[in-house]
Amino acid sequence: MRHHRWRLTPKQAIALQNRMRARLTIRDGPRAPRIVAGADVAYAKECNRCFAAVVLIELPGLEVVEEATAAAKIVFPYVPGLLSFREGPALLAAFARLKGRPDLIMFDAQGLAHPRRFGLASHLGYLLGIPSVGCAKSILVGEHGPLGTKAGSSAWLVDRGERVGAALRTREGVRPVYVSPGDGVGLRQALRLALKATGKYRVPEPTRQADILVERFKRDWLARHQASEQSRTGQCARSSSAATALDIRRS
Image (cartoon, rainbow, N blue to C red; front, top):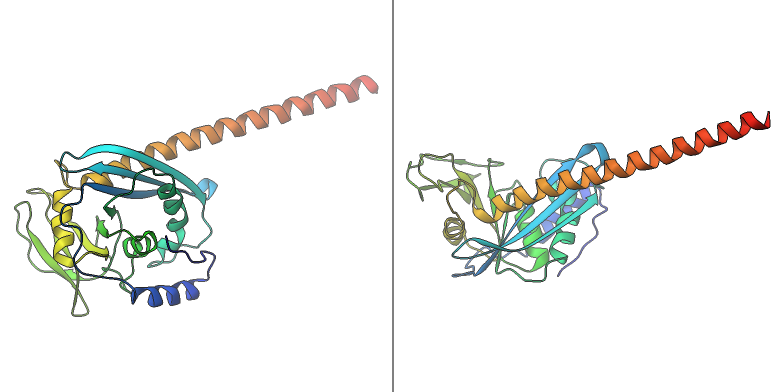
């Protein structure tokens, strides 16, 4: 796995994105991946935490075969286009806890469809050395033409004259998702892989399962944290009461 420092200024982070973008491979990709990872994050602003979840899905049956989670303090400010610097440490910690190695990673994020052509899916895919695809629910950059209503319909997403991804209708009659290569995958192959990993829902199954897992992990973590805080507060209150009673007896 590749590494770099995470405690950077926004200006340094942008410079790093620009340097690393030149190292991406936007072509080919796995033809028949067996294990596909889905990755997603959630935030808890009240305790300045980022929660990450990774789920391994086996194709073609779309069964969950492994899960991993991690939580990390947020050390980078919110800056559009630099989300990978907020979410990357937690995601890498979750990936490090996996026993299996996926053939492909799908992120609920952008890849090439990014102002500097280096979204989270590109960033983390490159660092992990695993082919990656971004499959986002909304557009960050670019526009697309008319999109058919049938499942599998797609329209290229174009930004400043460059194809950076596509709007993809994964199910008939549902809103599209926005697919872009991360690293080690070409444009057309990214679409094929997204469709292969889609079940009966709009969102591909790997990222759908990661979203479910990360929300459950966040909820459980916060409940444990709250219970711990309440226990600590109760102990402090009991200690204070005992000290007050002792002072009264002494007086």
